[in-house]
Image 1 (tube, rainbow, N blue to C red):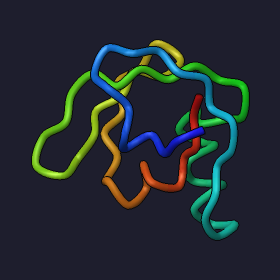
Image 2: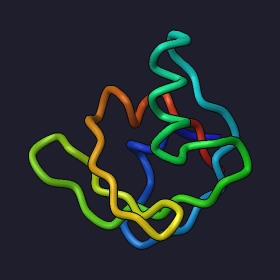
Image 3: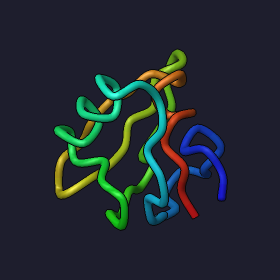
Length: 71
């Protein structure tokens, strides 16, 4: 397992755990970051990571990406 921020671009990964405070976890779950879901990093720009999740593109900060564990 590793944080989403360490994933290579274009690699599909399965979300294993979403960490952080309850508020943060709920926010990420509303965006589609749920355990068992598939996430693909599209690109990284200026500390933000753009990912493809549930057929949507979402940009999250590196601090948020560090709370999402994938494998």
